[in-house]
Amino acid sequence: MALYQDSLKEQRLSHCHSLAVSRYFFDNDLLSTEQRISYEEDGFLLIKGLVSGEHIDRFRATFERIFRREVQVPGLVVMRDVSIAKSEFVPDQKAISKLQDFQEEPELFLYCSLPQSIGNCHSAVV
Image (cartoon, rainbow, N blue to C red; front, side, top):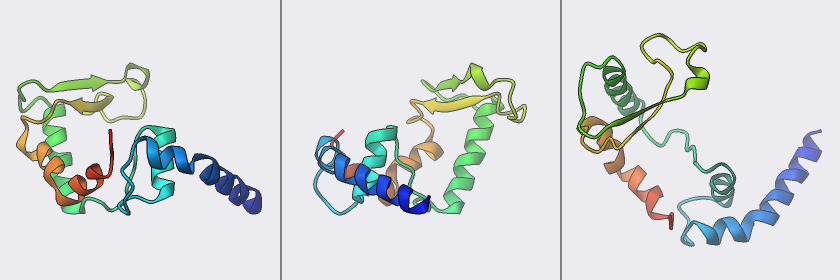
């Protein structure tokens, strides 16, 4: 089974290599071919360990204050996923799936100014 999965992975890499490299990204070494393909297929890229645990804790605390409506952020759009509203989420999260237009919230916008975030964004053409 593992051999079959490795074979599929190699076929996917081979098939998608030129499309993933040239469609959305500049040709540089910031992202691997596999990361580019993942973005091409999924529409997002998860890079584990990109942001420190300290920053994640700060962002989560701000996110939770927004959930509890303890702060008002001008222009912020809070997106709720109604399909998961009655799932396992704790009550203060209320199935919020994302925050949009958070640039006026200094703590959350800090994520956009982290050097590691900027570096990876610079490799994208999008």
